[in-house]
Length: 391
Ligand code: SF4
Image (tube, rainbow, N blue to C red; front, side, top):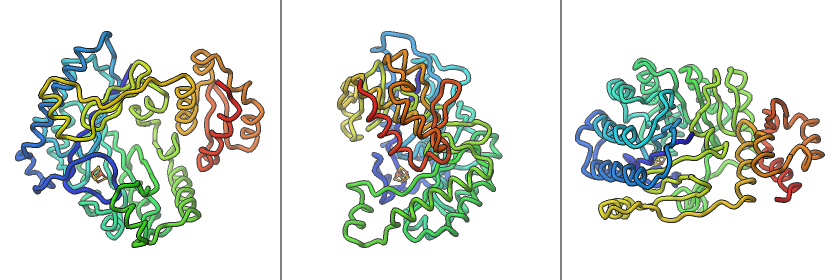
C-alpha cells in the first residue's frame, strides 16, 4: 500500500505568504481558455511522464497504490488532455487499487463545471479547494486571485458535476481578521456542505515576501493569544457543526478523512513526482530538485530529478510515527511494539496516564489518540512523551 504525490509547479500568480515551489504563469489562465496552456506546462507534462516511467523501471517490486494526490502549485491549471496523459502513464506504470482516493487541488477561479466533469471522467474523486476565506479584504491581503463568489461558484460546480468528496482549505490569524469575520467564513463554508475542511493558521515562512513585510513591521500580525482563540473557535464551531477533528488542522464528516494524508501521518510509503516533491520509500526519504528548469533538463537527459535522499534511522522513524500519529488520528501501540520493540504504554505509562486523566489523551482499540481538548496542546504533550522514551 502506497500513495503517489504529484507536484504541479505553476500558479497564475504567486501569493505572498506561500513557500511552496511554483512558477508564476504570465498569461491569463483564470478561466476556461486553458486549452491554450502555455508551452511550459506541456513540457512539464512530457517530463513528468518520463519521470513516472523511469521510476517504474527502477522499482524492484510491485506496489499497490491506494491514493493519488495532485498538489502544487495549482493542478487545476492542467487541461483535461494533460491530466489524461499523466493518469494514463500512472496506470501503465503502477497497480492502482480500484477504490483508490484520487485528489486534485484546485484554486477557485481556475475551474468550470465542464472542466471538473472532465477531471471526474479521468478518475478524480476528491477535490480540495484553496478557499482560505470568504471575506474580500482577507483574500486581498493574502493576494489570492479569487473572490468569495468565485470560491462559492467553484464548490457548487464541483457538487453539480457529481463529486461527493469535497474539501475546503480555510485560514485563520489573517491580519485584520476578527472572530466575527472568521465566524462568517466558517458559516459560509459549512453552508456549502463540504465533506472535509482543513483550517490552518497563517504562517510567516522565512523567505516569503510576507515574512519580509512582517520583519519590517509593515503589517500588524495577530498575537499568539488571539491565534489560540481563533484556533479554539474553529475547533468548537466545526465540531458543533458535525465535523470530526481527526488531525490538528483537519475535520471531516462521515469519516471522509483524507486518506492520502493519513498515509503520511501513519508513516506509510509514497512516491513523489514533479519539482520539489518529497517521497518516502523503503525507509528512505528523498526529494526532487526545486527548479523546473533543472527538473526538465535532468529528465531530458533520462536522469531522475532527485536532489537528495536520507535513510531514516530508527530513532528518527520512531519520533516521526509518534509525532505524526498523535497529531492525527492516533498511534497504534501494537505497531510500535512490533516495529520498535517498545511498549509506549509501559515506557511512558505514567505521563500518558496523567494526560488521559486530564482528558487530553484517550486510549482504546490499540490506539493512543489526542482528544479535542488535547489538540491545542499536542506539540507539548508529544514532546513530554518522547522525552520519557529512549530508543
Ligand atoms: S495558489 Fe497556492 S501554491 Fe500557488 S502561490 Fe498561492 S498558496 Fe502558493
